[in-house]
Image (cartoon, rainbow, N blue to C red; front, side, top):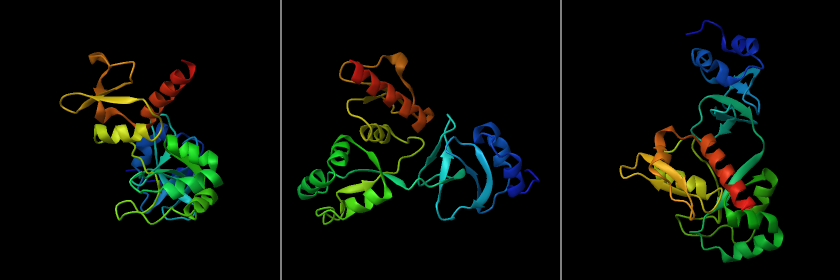
Length: 219
């Protein structure tokens, strides 16, 4: 374990990518504090408690990009003030969707296609629209905040992640459920395209989704 204090370690490594010194960081006893990173995953030189207002806990993906989620443990990043939201279609909310389409038509269209990101002010406005609340116990609100994992425990988790970001990309699953491949209505994956589910990260899947959307738009 490193003998450097957490504060001094972060000062000494300001501007360095978290991924570059991941093992060194993990050797430091940060206690209740975390190193702070910027939007590119580089240490800012700060080391602050995890419950500091205006910051959220994040993990650093394989590409170096920070991703905040409820199980994150690696670093802190200054909160952007935005949230990712998606529809809960088990909340029978015809009145809400009608009102949302009238008041925020662009957001309504984005939500009909999957998850979208809005700022805190818009999210607060959405929650005040008539029809937002009052659904059944298992789906009390028409729109919910999204919290996605860095990795995927099951193929169903992976498919849910994909469905929230695009439509048409299909997850094929091996007979033992341990490998997956990506396909669509025009492409059935070959055996060589399957890869271990346990090795997939959200960053990698985001890249697959981006390529799929680009190909769909250009065809």
